[in-house]
Length: 200
Image 1 (cartoon, one colour):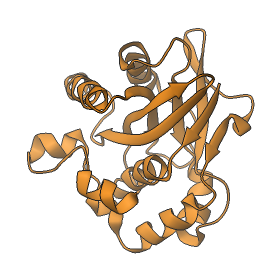
Image 2 (image 1 turned 90 degrees about the vertical axis):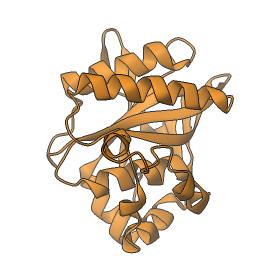
Image 3 (image 1 turned 180 degrees about the vertical axis):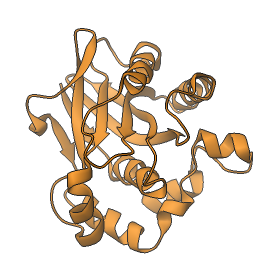
Image 4 (image 1 turned 45 degrees about the vertical axis):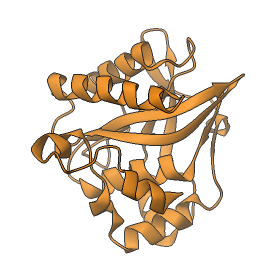
């Protein structure tokens, strides 16, 4: 499978991680499958409190499945950023949420992916707007999620890091709301419709 990641999805998931730099964050990837290509067009931020909070994750999964389906799309993957910069693996709790997204999301069998924010590439991407994409592609192998053998299977737009750096400089990470935010304040729009307009 090949995966394409839109600027909107890429910027939103990285901004979510930047908003909560000392915490793990996670969310779902929205898109569609076209043959052997999965197009990731949006990201829906889920959590920033603790990834092990099952009720919040279940609410987020149910609502995001319905939202994606209403636009003719499906949940095609999961993203995660670890709280520690030196941690480049997905935890057991994160893998369980990724498994739930894969089972319930609607991507054809075996085509769901997971993206892990790559802390080693964040500074170059967000400060200089250059370098490689600050995410690593993981695919389902057996019962677990493993780094894809070829990062070439993931395509991110050439100008995505420049756009991300401008958004980070302008403090736009504060504009990202996840389900935790929404459960604390129902006016915090987890769909991030206002931010979507800015990102498109």
